[in-house]
Structures are given as C-alpha cells and as structure tokens.
Length: 262
Image (cartoon, rainbow, N blue to C red; front, side, top):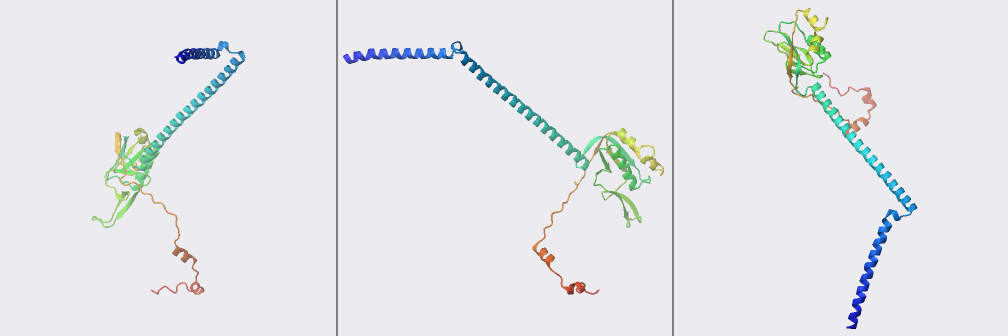
C-alpha cells in the first residue's frame, strides 16, 4: 500500500513537469519566430535571403515565359510551314493536272472549216499561259508540261491520204474546244492584243469564238506522269572478268575473223 501511495504523487509531479516544459518550449518557439524579438543583424540576413529568393523566382518566371513564347512562336512557324507546304502541294497538283479544277475563265471554239494547224493551237495555249491561265484543257485533255500537240498522217484512210492534229497522241476531233481557268478579262486581252494570235489567224479567215464563262470545270489527267530513275550500275563478277580479259595480238590484227561472210 505504501508503494502504491508513492507512485501516484510522483506520476502527477512528472506529468505536471512535462506540461510545463512543453508550454515553455512552445513559448520560446513563438518568441524565436516573432520578428519583433529578432536582432537587427538577423532581420537583415533574413531580408537579404528573401530578396535573393525573390530574384531567383523572378528570373525563373521570366525564363519560363520566354520558353513559352518560344514554343508558341515555333508552333506558329510550324503551322505556317505546313500551310505553305499544303498550298505548294495544291499548286503542284494543279500544274501537273492531277486534280480537277473549277473556276471562271474562257472557252475558245474552233470549227472544222477554219484553216488552223497544230502550231496555231500551241500559240493560243502559250498566249493563255502568258495571260495568267491557271489551267487549260484541249477537247477535255488536260494540258500540262508533259502534254504533246502535234500532227499525224493516215495513209490508210478510207478517203485517201489525210493529215490530222493530235493531243497526247490522240486524234483531235472538231469542234476543237479550248477551256482555260483564270481571270476572263486578262485572258481575253492576252488573246486579242493588236498583232497577236487572233489577228494572225484572221489573216487566214480563221475566227475562233471566244466566250467568257462564270464557272468552268477542267478534268484531271487520266494517267499521272510516271517517272523512271536510273539505278547505279554495279558490275557483276562476269563483267569484271570480261573487262580484265586481255586480247591477243592475233585478235588485234584480225578482229573480224569470227564474222561470217554474207
């Protein structure tokens, strides 16, 4: 019983002592954290440290902002580059005739009774290109840099020997209709310049009919142009043996000895 009586007071005393120490520690902590109780030198050091941290954060913010602007500008540049590539691709498709095209333009109709030769067709088409034509077709054949306009002969025609014009090696049937897309006024001016192609044709009583059209449709070429590329020549072992083979003096004297007489 005596031992039990001593344990209780000691426990109470220790508990009170722990509470007092805890309260004192908290009070000292609050005092230490309170700026009003800090020394001037400590406060100056704290201000300098905070100022340096603020400057570092400001530099980081500026750097991140520059990176963001750089990324945005790079993204815009990439977008512009892609748009430029797509636009160039569309231009190339139009030039190569691989896509159909719609727009305002002209039609030039040539009847069979008009004395026109294939060089006149070439001149008309060149004048249209010079006047700003975007696309041209000749009797529904799309004209590109690979098109051919020429003349051919038919010695076995039922009415006897005949000559006819061709486009892409196909016979041109009358009426010959040239369609071109572009600014109609500019195209017409290009064809009807004084001393131009139309005046030259008029000297031979050829008067092609020119008509402005609000919307024309030109077809794409039926067969895209095929490109063939040469491969690098690599000689085989047999070719190397042939090139290293030496000729005998007898072969040099009489190189035609193995050719049989006719």
